[in-house]
Length: 331
Image 1 (cartoon, rainbow, N blue to C red):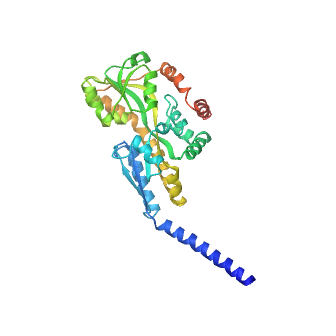
Image 2 (cartoon, rainbow, N blue to C red):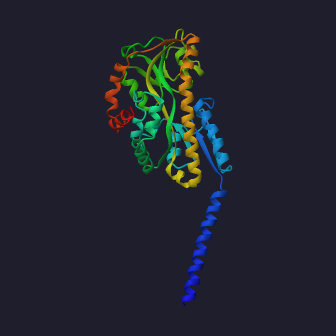
Image 3 (cartoon, helix red, strand yellow):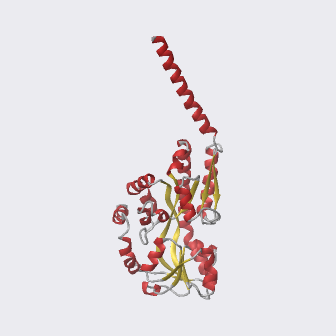
């Protein structure tokens, strides 16, 4: 009897061990095809860095993780992108964290106007316990943030008149992205804002439907939006450091072998930091190129009145005071 029990236990252990080995082998043999989708052009600095990261991921996983990039809004962006991520589809969506505000309200706060003073401040905040707790809440809601450390430029106002004070924004017909954080910001600043696809901005400014757009130096220069105006002014309102993240479904993320998910996270986070250094260093050069093309640069020495206009809105955001305190602790 005793020998039979020992034999039975041995057989069970052999079966379990073989199952683990077979399961591990199947995971190693499987190729994971993932779509990385974005509205941004593949030629931007950040998309270029992500492309390089995806190539490194493929090499480090022996081709078992194949991240295919779909830039320029080719597929699954805005509502479709959110739905794909929250449905645990094999998708990584590069977008504004505030788009997931229905699932993680504090993600809206990460995009608040006049919150950051530098790219380094963004990176420090995203590495802080405050944001790590936010990530934990996101995972409970079914959302995984690979990183929220990308900064794709400082957003300013390009218009047919100079913006020297907050009063100059009153009634300005300005295009903003169709995202709540932007519409509420420019509502607070007193503009006559219009959400519109970026691809339609040039003709709208040419015909007078719009007389302004809030835009990073990269997009202003690369798309030559200022050519739509007889005289273009680029006013340094610096209303937002444009924070962007990479998001996927928590269920899908957990389905990946841990070895692979660690490599994906490591390479894409590194891409964010590399991109930030390059974008930060090229913003001034891009502005100078715009000036060389005839754009009139409008520096604004004191932004306190602009900040005062959006402050009541910011204070309503979840964890705003906590995030401001965390940022203050870096100084």
